[in-house]
Image 1 (cartoon, rainbow, N blue to C red):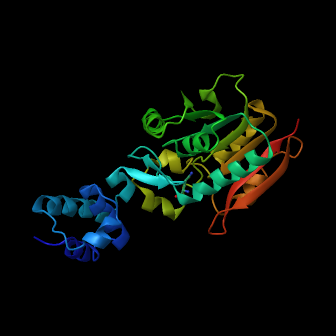
Image 2: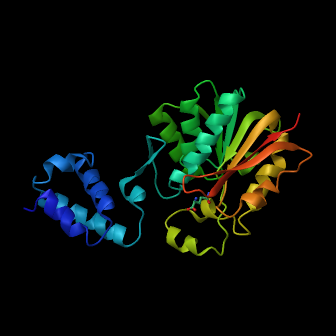
Image 3: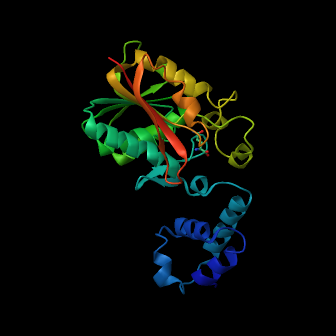
Length: 272
Ligand code: GLN
């Protein structure tokens, strides 16, 4: 029988070393750190066969989070499967922005539209337990994953199915609205590498601004006075998104950069 060290060494020619460790750790129900002290342990033939199959899936392009069924986000583990966008580190910028804003302006309610795995709504609900959090998604499949994550992580969220504000009662109003909508331009060549994720979570199929525009346009009907709207967007969309905020309705409109120093989140406050 081969040892863990040998199996990982052989896999390193085929997939990223870090990813190979994640896949083997998943099969052995252990943490990656376990291998540091146990790399001379033997791998059973059964695990070796299953590892081979996971490596082939990864080589074919399937993202590791779908293979192992989970992804870390803001130090918590979220279940993911095909049908929901895989949480990205970029989106932690949206979380940090909202946490900072909420520390300076009292808020009691928050809406997350297009919640997907629920990572934004659930993280914010757990970080700010005093907040009443509502989350929507058009996709029933995504809502099932988000509800499952909310239950596992013990976050209280009110879920609604539907497209953007149509998911909500007409008179629903919030202190904060957040969203990470589809914003990739349909012609962006990056989409080809994202073929395992739901296309409707990645692009609006028009110009990458269609859903961002729709969210800003109707936000005044669903925000309380001085309410905050904060949306994630692409690295090259900062100026275009700021321009969606009509100066007669909004103030304090600005764009926040992510850890890679790219424009990532634009926010504004509704005039009273
Ligand atoms: N940030 C994601 C990516 O570029 C896209 C997510 C989105 O469109 N909301 O892969």
